[in-house]
Length: 91
Length: 274
Image 1 (cartoon, rainbow over the protein chains, first blue to last red):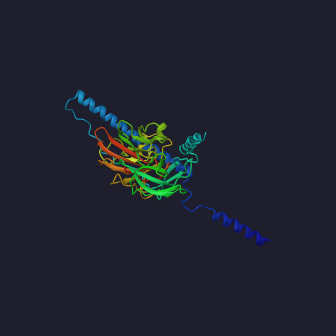
Image 2: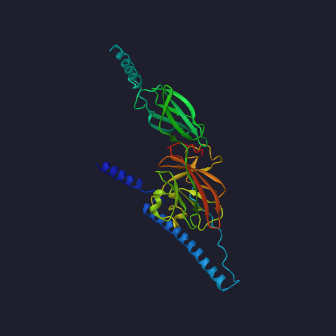
Image 3: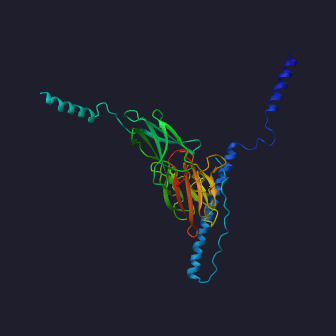
């Protein structure tokens, strides 16, 4: 009877150990991943908005220079933005 | 009295002959339809017998796009109501004639000639003007649409972009509308039920049959459409129709390009000769 009790405890202990996630694999939950995805998308939108605001500001500034400070130094043209298309998918 | 019977008999005989007593009832083939077959390169014609007597046979007529004369094709027996035509990549008009002796009675005329929409101006996504383009599924004519309105989502079949802020002077793309809200273009294109369509690589012969739709022939975008002219095959994934777009006359100053299109109204037919 005692042996049976020891065996049962051993089996339960092994099951508990076996159910633990491998080291380093239990760190990121789906919620955290979704949150990260949302953050990246927000950042993408923010960068796009910043680009548009900068273009608008540059146009206004250059207009002001042309009108009130003839020969003044206008803002340099922004560097050509590199196209960033999504991956090309077939079918 | 006997003299009266001769003219009376003659009159009766004439009546019998000219009144068509026991004469043939003629009519044209009905319910004529055309459909694509054999991977979209052949045209299958189907019809029903005239609502009249059985004709001697049927003749299939074809008038190729750009020509004026009907060409007599195959003759089929009176109990055959289908025919598959190989137009050798040409498009054209079709009709079926029911033959009664020396007379022919024609069905409706159906066509595989694509519907043409003349050149319209499309703006790169960040330039002023409409960047979207779509075909009406009732008259198959194309129109431009704004990509900034989610209410336009069901009508747009493609849009023009450089996938960057501002308007670049080169490397413009024809893109599937659903890429708008999920790419850098999301700063302009709002979320919505935008359509998913596919585009071929540039085609060299605008009158040749378009490539068959597959994962290796049609893509979610194709670039360098600013090269004048550029012809792109379009496949509408929901309706399974093919179309051809010609891009030309790019204006990098105001960020616009001209688009002229040909839409194949027969579902699944890849023929686009015009």
